[in-house]
Amino acid sequence: MNAGAEWPLGLAWLSHALSRDLQRAARVAGGPDALWAATGPQMASWLGGDRGAADTALQARAAFRARAARTALSARGIVHVPITARGYPTRLRRIFDPPFGLFGIGALVPALQAMEQGPAIAVVGSRRPSGAGRRLASQIAAELADRGAVVVSGLARGIDAAAHEGALEAGGVSVAVLGSAVDRIHPRRNVGLADRLGERGAVLSEYWPGTDPMPWRFPARNRIVAGLCDAVVVVEAASRSGALITADFAMENGTPVLAVPGWPGSALSAGCNALIRSGAGLCEGADDVVAEVPSGAWRDAPVAASSTGPCAAVLAVVQREPAGADRIAHETGLASAEVAVALAALEMDGLVAREHGGVFRAVSGRGRGGRAPG
Image 1 (tube, rainbow, N blue to C red):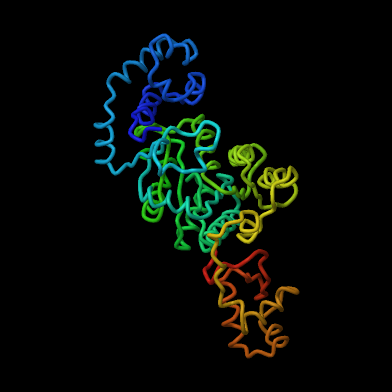
Image 2 (cartoon, rainbow, N blue to C red; image 1 turned 90 degrees about the vertical axis):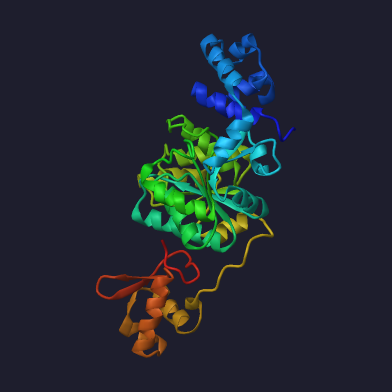
């Protein structure tokens, strides 16, 4: 394919002018390049017989100037990576209806290169998660970032935002995929998060700048999230959650799907538990993802200070059953001051939690290298 072809950028412009996706029309036409070169009757036919849409498309195409468009995009700090370019993600080329190109802000090219070189994992879930679900999403994303993965999600509120934040807090790379243009951050409450993503990753979209979010654009966005990744992890999802659409796209691509199991009867657990029943892998932490996605680019898990010495002795006690500081000191033979220091370190690592009455219990799952969970 010709990397200098104007149709990848041009079709994004036509899609914006028509306010409709052109993936199906491109398939009917025999390819996106054929759609771009269509005559009036062909365009009308390939747009489902809509002569008005065809006229609008032809007028927009006649007014389009690729070089001027690229210059204008660059002036706004927006990068466009067409499907014809070498830097376009290899995984994404293989999906059904790959986007004609990707618009991005932030460190888009380095982020895409990082995804090519190492594992890329999507962490998605409910927009209205429980507090525990939000913390777990942040923790899993941080663990994955610690292990060298690029964390991908959709910048939605809830699990998506928690995943991005966890990866960033761990010093990792995270990429957000939007169902709107990169200059139309949605939801607006996540504009600050998008700015932070631009520093250590990227925000990307298939839509021309100025394209507003619409309900039908989010499932289209989800196919890109799934297509960019080596695996999809779902953390809390109701039975009709958009995260399940991402999981379905991944399964269609032959990409592993993992889900965090939840409490039976909880609406937020229904989607995840259904995925596990249908064959998805069970995920309790990054180790489960590493086991599911073979890659020589995975890094060894960082060793937490709480895994050795007094911390290990204290943890062994509370893992058997919750206990107070005095009992822990008695069973371990440690001084009260040593127990207090160890408990503080274990709390920071997310391995123990303080309950009412000064009792400490072990937290299920894995700590993350000495950092407090999100």
